[in-house]
Image (cartoon, rainbow, N blue to C red):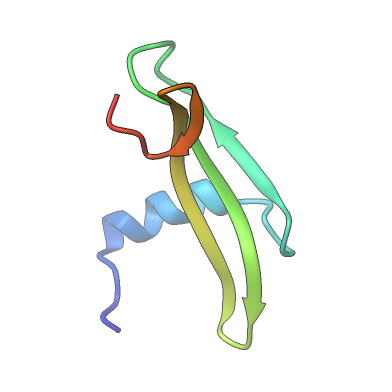
Length: 70
């Protein structure tokens, strides 16, 4: 696995602040309708740290989808 850039690391740190245990989650919607909100969830804990899921959620054909092609 290769490390992420310093810019990406700073963004990841902002997105994951307060996420400590699996099940913790946050939602960021800073663009007031211009972009889809981003959801961040702590999925699992391993010895290296938390496994994090980052996705946009929206409806596609009436179903809630992660990263739909709206």
